[in-house]
Image (tube, rainbow, N blue to C red; front, side, top):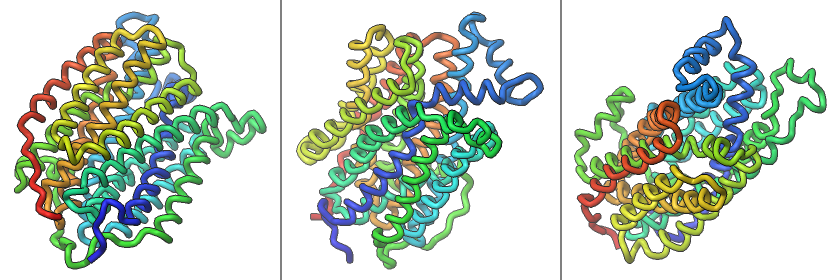
Length: 442
């Protein structure tokens, strides 16, 4: 039996694995508006499928003057949804597989796929290659649920929330470095050295892609050499499941643990609202304040710092005193406040006040809600239950950006953010009836 403690050295290894992975994942965040403009201009001409689709979107715009920007927002929402849809399909598969063969081999497989996906991005001068890159990284993006299950393997139920807070801290630190690297490396264009390199797929975003690729390779080597299996053979569940992706999601209705089912629905409605609004925050910064990719990078750095402070000072220190349920409620309330503030933010100071509430809400809600789902699960079912929990979030994240972009497109940024804040009343109400987890381990 492996040592189970909040200070288990394996936690540090899992933390660094997530941290490196999330840096590479978040590098593209501040580049999104510029990337979409580049690929739309390059591959959206007459006679192409992309061009026909963009023409359809522009025809839906309320005014001809807003058609270009709003169609870019809506198209970006669809592209973001693609990644999360693939996560929705494959995260439960990776979680279930890790229950059967262990966490380590699944992490190695998914990280190897991430390496391939970022390598394609480096050569993605064509939009079709970018799509292929996103498909591969979306499929292999389920390693978060596997790493989360590994944390559950090496912590007790009493220390689970503090262990899960490491996931949130990895997110926060990743969001500090990743967007900063993306924002500044995105200003370096290899084509300025030799424009002929475009013939082999080099594009204006190849430098950020190269950084993400090197980080993914480092992560793969790190896991291969340092990560030791956390799931003992006697705790592995070898009963194969063959449900479809939607079938796995609909298992939320028939889970033997009603508590896991309940927390999964809270996660679904929270992510449905937050992913739609958080996706569009870079476009909101461009529209309201004229942000460049570098400024968008610094915006994510600020949010990352707030998330790290929130999780280090609040979640890890007081969760065992206050409890997860009250913290989830407070996090949801903070997110709702953020959306209402951002709906009217027209200057830099007001905008960053809204971002503070947004980062605080995300920093508290995600780890505490994940910890609740884990605490409601038995040891042998961690991978499957967290897979369903993450699947609910992934399905919401697959729908959320498109819903948020549609609201942004048809009603404008102000109304879209007001609606997002009001929608969070649903998970707020549901949270009040979440059961208190019973601590069975000392």
